Length: 115
Length: 111
Image 1 (cartoon, rainbow over the protein chains, first blue to last red):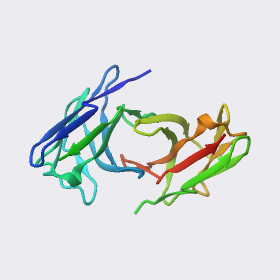
Image 2: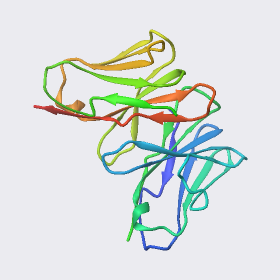
Image 3: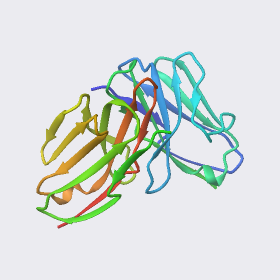
Image 4: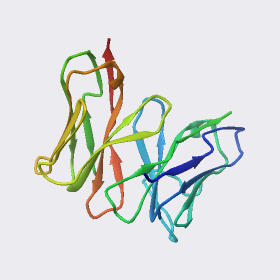
């Protein structure tokens, strides 16, 4: 089946640094990618939706200048957490689909810890 | 604003028992998803429900969708310990390219 590869799986960084998370679709064209954030024992909160070649649509309350999303190709989307702070520590999960197909493929997630 | 409400949020049950998790949503949708998540892991797709009256079954799990009532259920039959996990429903919003998750149901099955 289709695979979405997400890297890194775990990252620890110092406060004030930037972290990039990559999400690649390995065997299909990911026309749409979704980025979610999940705090411990909570649900997945949609951060933004990105379509290949266009600007991401951010959910209310998500700072677009802090969480930079790039979806430059049909197989790659990146989320950059700029000037990370401890409150940004969370589990970040990407998901992808082709057009509006009724099937989402999830990455394995990235556990971000900001010291 | 779309709301996706799951209940219960936490469920502890004995092996061998049956139970149902409910997922209500507040807007028109033509598809609903159920996922399982184990601690520290990403999501595993369980069911995709695409039409009113859809029913799907896999092992001890069965999901159904009533689009008129905006309600989906996930029924567990004769629960076993291996089904302990968090279960999420997610709604694919008609006319909008976003998928919103319920708060999840933490299922703990006692051996």
